Amino acid sequence: MNDFNRKKNLIKFLNIINPSEINIKKEEIFYREKYKEIINYLKLILTESKDLEIYNYVNPKGLVLIHAHPGIDLLDYLKLICSNFYIHCVQFKESEIAENPKEFLEDFTSIFNYFDEILIEESGKQSKDKNQKEDNSKEINNQKLLIVNQNQRLEQLVGVNNLLQKFLFYYQEEDNLTKIIKNNLVIIWVIYNYEGILNVSDQIYKVFDFIIRVPILNKMERQQVFREFMEKNPKISFDINKLVELTEEWEVEEINHLLRTGILKHHINADLNTTSNEITDIIIDLVESREFIPYGKKHLEKNKKEQKSIPEGSSTEKNITERDLKEHIPIESKEEILNQIKSENYSEFMLNQLYENAASENYNELVLIIDKLDKKEPLEDNDRKLLSKYPFILNNSPSRAQIFLEKAKKRIDMITKSFGK
Image (cartoon, rainbow, N blue to C red; front, side, top):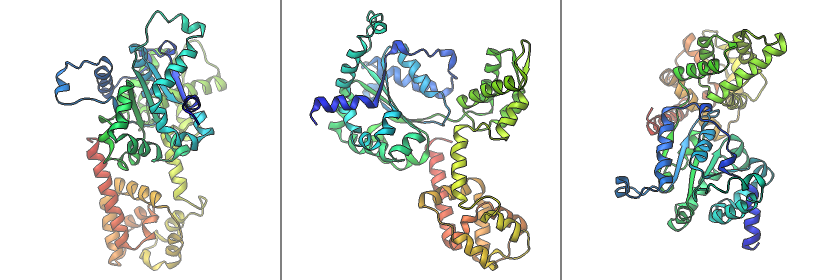
């Protein structure tokens, strides 16, 4: 394929947004402390103030990796910045990637190499549109912002680690990285899982300037999200404190979607009135009945299903709890149950995830329980109940289980230290 056809083929993977087409308002963004760090970094890059003192020590490349949580309004915030600085905002088209995932992965680095030429060609097409002609009076900044949104859908299409690893392997070479910098291309890479960062931690700083971690909403921030929604919609009422407790570890977009769904449910069942509409009970029912599941919880449910390879009601965990753990008999004497547990097969990745979850929740208690199993000592009621939550521990000998648990704890400690928790 010649260069012309290659560039033409690559365009299909890009969604190039003209700044005049961005209609996001600053009032729609939930501002948090880390957003200041993002905007200050982009100001430094986009204004090209080479006379600043920082350039005596560091020469920023214009590439930053952001770790966030599903449901954050970060992408809208970045688009708003593009609108304010009047620069092109570019994202990958997931619909095209879904149709040609292999082709996208193979041509991934070529997109960056030909980026300027692709953008010029596509902008030329857009300028023919009537709406674009109206904006010709305002010159678009030569720089452009590419947002790589490595969400769960993209990982499913191209592999959890393939995209970031491929990018880092290629652009850690100075000649390749120079092409991006010369193209005036600013790259914001958003990733949502620790694993993807840890797998390439030794290469990140060869390409990216640094990592920004945006913490999930805390209790006070969730209160603020609910309060702002109520202020914008004075006819809608709900118990903020109850809903704050209900939405622990939720992000802003998830909360807003939940509230809108609750309003719709209220209208369907009782009709909205012109004075006051109390939707607290409807919201609680939506969550408890799982008629509304936030993105992050969907991922959690998926992991839980992978842990249980047989249907609920006859699962290994339930068998242990109801048949055995209520009795004052050592678990190791129940050969039938142990054999059933050991027959469960987990991938290495899944087993690591399970042990990390166990270590984060009950590390100290599990260390003692595994030690008792190793010494063939009887377990107390509380020990057996706790162990029933983590039946995979019995897949291995106590000594190997202890090794897995300790490694998981070290990974968690490394993650915590890396992100300043």
